[in-house]
Amino acid sequence: MSDTASDLAQMPEDWERALAVVAHPDDLEYGASSAIARWAEQGKSVVYLLVTRGEAGIDGIAPAECGALREREQIEAAAVVGVREVEFLDHRDGVIEYGLPLRADIATAIRRHRPELMITLNHRDTWGGTFRNSPDHRNVGLAVLDAVGDAANRWIFPERITEDAQPWNGVRWVAVAGSAEASHAVEITDTLDKGVASLEAHRAYLDGLSGDMGDTGFLRTVAEDTARRFGGRLATAFELISFS
Image 1 (cartoon, rainbow, N blue to C red):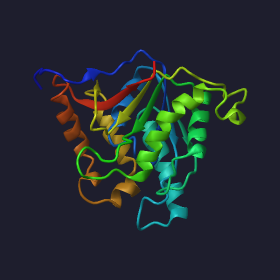
Image 2: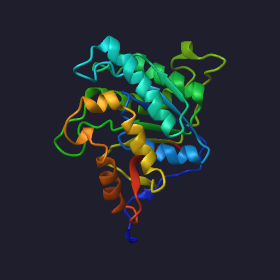
Image 3: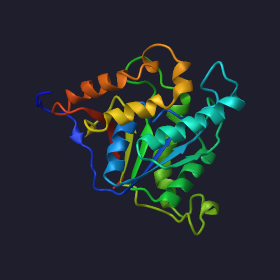
Image 4: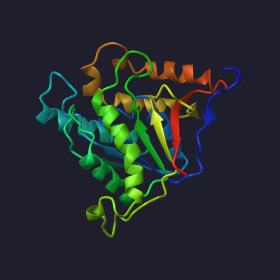
């Protein structure tokens, strides 16, 4: 691709630790994982925190079986991009509630992992048009934004403070994937294939889908579309919210 003008700024990369918090297995693989692969190759630490096990995500598989299956697929998908630490919170898939329990769980994870960068998925009502975002995505994204402040304040959720989970005010940014308000991007020319492979690891989930969301080729299309806003370089876009 030829160089073009860019209206997306370069994502900051002067950090060492990130915590990615999303609702479901596969949420990170729909774009963000290509960027995470780049960061892992740079030697940065990225931890995944899944609020559910995705047990309600496949119509033809009962939740009791589906949750364990999707957990295994998520761990495999994370390993493809160099992420070895994957945690699950066990909130119920499809009915995640925004509220104090969710904020406390995420704040506790922030206190334990002490990230500089948080990564999450679009918390807005739509994906930029009329297609509505799911309540799970919205509630988790909003809880992530609020938990950053919670984690820093020792008087919020003090009962969750332990020797290994001390208050942490070191989060500098939250990077929101899939946002129509994208402001930044990271080049993924060398790691797009890893991102595609990480989505392909969700084999059972993809088999249950139809249309574009079941075709991993759309990840390259999105990266090429983003390139038109990022100097012609294949890229993943994020809405970057600053906390410092």
